[in-house]
Image (tube, rainbow, N blue to C red; front, side):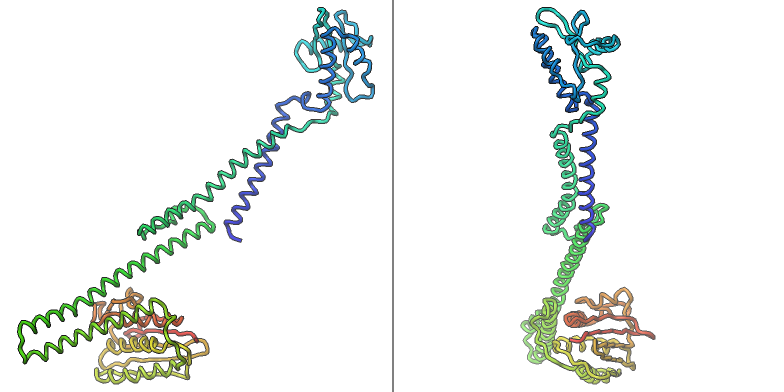
Length: 445
């Protein structure tokens, strides 16, 4: 489980804690704001009795009030109510201390609960009350009523709405940013990056933003490479086609039979050059599309490499150079033999082309149960450090001192795609003592 899970879990846990705390706080506030005398079951019962006696006295029904007072159970947890007339006589004739009577009158005058002055319809006045000590005893052991159900429900609902809105806003913000980024990318703005817009997040959504940035960068590089490839192809095709047009134009303007053979030879050379370029482009395009349709066969790659080195030896001797091959054992694998042949040949011929006169190209093949390691090393001028990775890109030709050399610059690009299509790797490194060393690693197929 990732960070986003734990973040949502902790937020929900915090939400529950805040909701419970808010309910407890609202309940405590209700208990603080509402007097205890108004929030117990005993208080409600006593209030009902007081209202009945008050109604009876106000309507001159003293007999009813007398019956209510006389029928009051002595074992009741509620304090006994008392009724005094204007002369200070208690309705049931019960004796009361003067201090209790004075306290009742003071409480009635101050509007305190359970002590009220009643005016009857005939003008007589009564004082209805309970003794302060009895009232305090009742409140001490009273059963407190819970707050109204609407209070915790409304509190929980309000907190839920606030927390849900906060959580939804926080979760939707990166999604909105991602939607914006996808729209920008769909509109062709390949330089769009979402990382800076994700803020300080450290969860899966931030990682998703990083994946988007990586995808956008790769798309930008691929589209840029395709544009450069189209530009380079058009440039490479334009030159031989221009020479073809010039040769045909000269042949038409000067139909000289003596020069016809040389003109046709020139046209043939340019046609062969265009055909070679188109062939290499088709090979590169097939490799870029994937090697799923390439016919595979079981071949000994060490033997295949030895045959290529043997053929390169003849070309090297004509240039005053040499090729030495050293391979141990065999490495039989099911591969696209034609593609790997082109890859090995391009690397070896490139080394023969650039190695210095009188030097030797060393080819070493070391096989194991897991992989075949191939090294092709020359004694040429080498390649600048900054161009070691780029030399496998199409149409990039890096010669001595980093200057462009002849050729289309597709040989090493084809070699890299062919090797990578077989799950292998190819890389270039400076050779000790001068020159270039190309290393190829192919896993067992």
